Length: 165
Image (cartoon, rainbow, N blue to C red; front, top):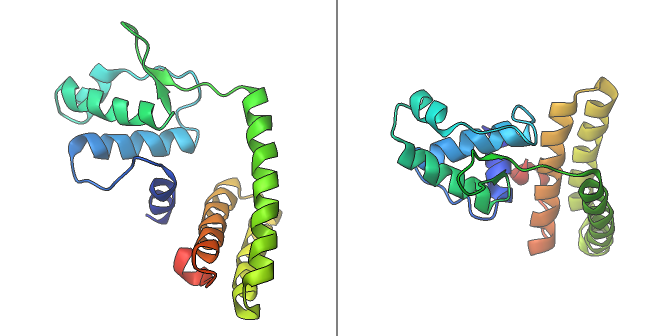
């Protein structure tokens, strides 16, 4: 449940809803982000309609939400597929993230209290534990939580590490 909250907080247009298209969107988005649906994987709308016991209209709505988030590509008159990611895109994303995380860290350290920095340090220790254990999934989700705590810290300069994780 925490994974899903963290993921859907990060997605721009993923406002909560109890609709069937939104439930399909959530399941597919989680499968894409966690790698169960790899880049280039074709998304069969008829199969999804059967699995969710619905018509193809809600499936198309879910796919449009996924396309808006950049998670799928819907070519004209062809089957949708999971968005590909090139090595160059990955490098560029990590270079930009490294620069942004450096700036965020400087701001948090300069403005946060000792207690707030201690909370972030505890989260960092959890990431180190995950890395030492080789638990990639736990590391991924704890990192999302760490970044959410950082974001909360930047927004209010009142870090409460436990509230974001």
